[in-house]
Length: 441
Image (cartoon, rainbow, N blue to C red; front, top):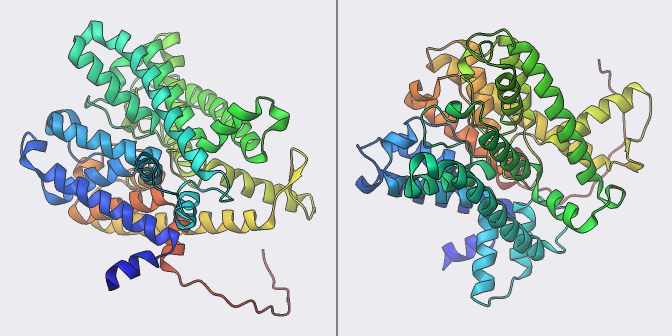
């Protein structure tokens, strides 16, 4: 009874943390069963895979297609779906099916899980998220099936289409094939469908609902406008930069046809936004390209999406803060709307906690792993952004290295602030003190 009371009295971030850990533990147990693998894997590898799936990251220490049986792959895809669409989404749907009332406590949990600013309309949002997600995945499944069934047969073609549709929409990056999607580097259908799923899944459910209800750009929320414009700009810039930087690299796109170069550049421009699929060898990219992809992975996708990172709106808010300061203005204005100062503080907190976590993880891996520094940095930021791209280090990680990456993936998915709020003791004091200047810069 005392344990039950303790659970009931947990804050929303603490409940999310507890539920997330529970599902990862269940996933680890299922993946460790003999029925899940062709040959036995270690407990750490099972935990790593379950965490990577639940956090929709896509980093793998064992090859998915050759290590896991059909049962094991189904466990992985279920963890991806639950982790991507959201634990609370499925919980609410179960409540609704059972005819249970969604109380205030549950609505707070949904608000926290979906990163919403208010509690109003969260149940309706959950219903829309589920219907939209299943619909988009079903459409992608149909198109990919038309592409892959003639190549692999009815059963395999349908299953491969289902697996990659769910994985792509949830920005997970898990693939049946050990080379990810490199065999389809110049395939228009595969490129368009997978990147469409990545963009839609990563733009944020709040934005998708706003797009559906508002129709006109002028009537959309500031968050939606920032996400749409920001996503368009960052994808275009990434496409042109990768195309130019890799144009003459024979290890990636240098020896491809012009159309192949364009498709490969486009795919690699989209996938660092937390997706994890790749159509060229990431380990063979030029160093300037790798450095730029690090930035993309750190920024990540949109809030209330299937992706990770500090989030695009957080990055934009910090950029606007800098430009506003340089212009000697006191108010940050965008699309004729001013940003709440609390948003700036929250963005700064997210960025600083994220940088701190990444720094500590890199420091530990430099001590434990026998690998180039850039490879270690790439692995850590990929884990934090729940991206899943790797330069080849994941499979060679030591046990300590695997544990560190597991923790980074976990924090990257839940969000630095959610974890901080679940640990920190909230102050109830409302004392105000005199202001005083300090020297900076």
